[in-house]
Amino acid sequence: MLEKAIYGGRRYWVWIFFLLGVIGVGFLAYLYQFKQGLGVTGMSRDVSWGLYIGQFTFLVGVAASGVMVVLPYYLHDYKKFGRLTILGEFLAIAAVIMCMLFIFVDLGQPLRVLNVILHPTPNSVMFYDMIVLSGYLFLNILIGKDVCVFVCQFFYPPVRLSLSHLVEVKEMVSSPWR
Amino acid sequence: MSMDRRDFLKIAGISSLVGVGGFSAVNSIGNRLEASQIKKNPEALTATHWAMVVDMKQFRTKEDYQVCIDACHREHNVPQIEDNPKHEIKWMWTDTYEHVFPGNESEYLAEKIKEMPFLVLCNHCENPPCVRVCPTQATFKRESDGIVMMDMHRCIGCRFCMAGCPYGARSFNYVNPRPYLDEENENPEFPTRMKGVVEKCTFCYERLAKGLEPACVEAAKENAQKNGTTPGLIFGCLDDPNSEVRKILSERFSIRRKPELGTGPSVYYVL
Image 1: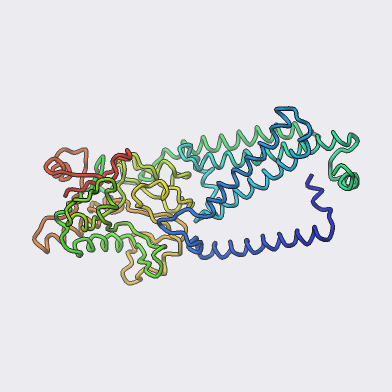
Image 2: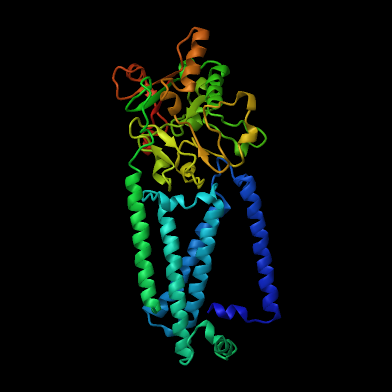
């Protein structure tokens, strides 16, 4: 599936580089925050959690919606949704990664983040956040890959998805079912 | 040796489970050891449940409050951040009756009480919500005497404890606090902090270990001596029926902050 990301027209690449630019600006802004402290966000003693945690909770919902999209395919055997499941799984992966990054940038001492694993505290909800997010990410990558291979085989039995079959994939991408 | 993906995932999954599980098991045994395994100072003040009584009758002027707050903040190198109130660090401060005891106020409350500032600090709860939510045990309740401690070297700065504390007793270092310290009056006995960690009142555990009372209590005593009154802050063991705090609690009417939440605050107010 990811292999498809490197094929596209001019407009596609313009859009990709624009998005990379946005990511770059965000990264530089984070470096500034890393140096100055979380004070640059405008949070205070009274408002100790802000947009970062808000985004995290929102994106958790987006990630969970990935599963909702997959359910009809597996549970109700509604095979028409097959192609959509790939999109759902990869949306979930992207959303979970953003969730984790939002928590990371919200930490005052991000370099100590492994203390959560080093001193596991099952009475803290944050501990379960860590387990659920990493578990969900792992599952989605696994299922995303599986679904992807399965769907490709479903529509194109001779195709085995791997990096060595890029040419075939390219043909598949430009094929009419898409 | 070749293996297919299924086998690889099995082996990788099991070995990471064993690794993480084993590490945390060993680690949780290690955590039982306390940092206090050095020889104790024979003069150290000890108790099974430290508590404080704030006698509001003894706080008459603004200065009566200020000496306690200043003593605390000087003792613990608390930065005085005045250029941005959002970044303020407070271990001890004052607030109005309405804010300190929400739900207890009424329209016909004595004007004097309504306007009187109340001295507030960490309540060192019997059942502290901050300890419950901390993902790294950076804040913890010391089993021996009930003080809610703070390890500022372990804190990852997630601010969950600030969200958990119903008394607003915790402050986060939104900026590097060191430039805001008064270099001449810095206390070399207590560490300064870096940005990105949470801090709060610790009932002066470091002074108790040396046999001294908390800085605010000592300041209140000195102030009372100067004015020829009795001190407004009383500190002692709640489990000892002969302690000063128990005496005053058995004689006068006392209230605690938000007792309905079940946190069991160890700071009592007598009016």
